[in-house]
Image (cartoon, rainbow, N blue to C red; front, side, top):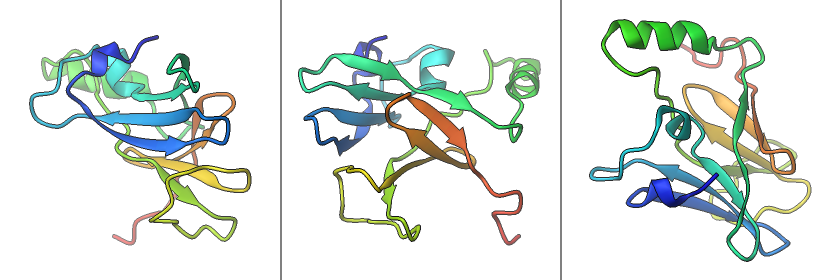
Length: 138
């Protein structure tokens, strides 16, 4: 696990009470190429010294089937489906987005978006797909 592959990528950062942080790297023009795995697991937790504690894992909870998505992408000549996470957002217990807050503390939910809604377990490093079945009005 290393964040070195993400040189040239922009990042969202959330500070943690222990001095560490959670970083979501997102691609912007001219970023360094990364592996299929790294692009689909682009969130990291760092300790206060900058050492990687975990690289995000995904738990889709039956809401997305990676094998099918990878097969469809490969049929189009790609190396697989690339769905990097695109942000980090903090929500309070009333599910209100705290737009101006960039420091997590107990009681807040850390959410990321990627063709769905994922709640991050900051201790385990797991992004759980919590997208409601009908989350879009259209």
